[in-house]
Length: 223
Length: 257
Image (cartoon, rainbow over all chains, first blue to last red; front, side, top):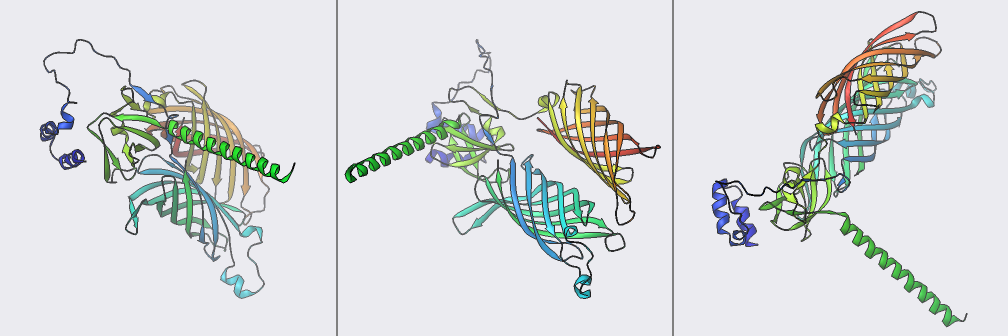
């Protein structure tokens, strides 16, 4: 214990001081290697460095999950949305994500007020999207629950492109948003995501850019 | 069988079942222990961080000479478990300062540039411009040799007046596979299904043949990741006898393995 405290205190100290101080720690003394500065070793051991292959260590860079929440489809009200996500963590900062989602549009105000008229048929109200995004862990850190529990978490930003199928049309869609990842343990994560799906639509006569905001909660596991 | 015998038989079966279960658990525990790779700390100490990132604080140090289990890896961080049961994350550079239990130096592999020039398969996505329309492409490639690869591309085109889906087969030649920024040439053919926007015009879907030649470049980024950009010049052999020429520009990213 004492040795560890000793090490902790010494960590910020400059390297030469560290060497001198370590000499003082008796437990290390007998492990110190003699230094031959003026002569080459007679026998040079040729040790081949052993590469630890991926098969030996479980690599968990892939995250697969499901989410559900609310999506506001412009002019068609707020509706339930559900989907699946697939993430690959490239570095500790960056990740890429592929997501699929589905929702069903409600009625426009016009349809509700006019009584019987329908802008879209039943199957045309289905909205499906897929997208590919890049993400950046802007604020990695820890979240504290009570006094004894700390969980790893991150606030991240995302942006990407994709396709939204709505009213029998395919729409090129740009998405941007932010999310919060909360790791319950090493391999289970909870997510809160806010995203804007932006595409242009001429459904109501004139072509316009629509913003379709989505708020979801989800769970995912690392593989 | 009388009642007592039945009870005995039942108890016997229970014992047998419990025995199997215990043995199974013991085996599983043994397997779990044996599964982890072990390394010995060779530097004065090994720092364990609370999370897999540079900002997470060090909460524990393992002393020199102690053995640790390597539980898993996430990006360039390793979750290790000390003999005292402390679990924490260690960065790859620190892991390289450990030795095997027998004392041999270790090296933790990173998919590097060497793997890039020897890659066999590639999966990627691209987005860009298809003669004024938006296009999204996913593709899968297989390297026949270091210079030559075969590729399947699936594209979705989002136009103002029509949408289209295309599937093409391409052959890619890369003369300099060992360059970090490696150019390539592309030649291929396929089919394109054009679907006019129903709200504007009432036309039938069209299936037509498409052929293309292109040029592009891959740029090795990091680990198993590459950026890729390309230009393709397409000719659509239209059913109405006149050919349509299309310029397509797109860029995206890909994994290789």
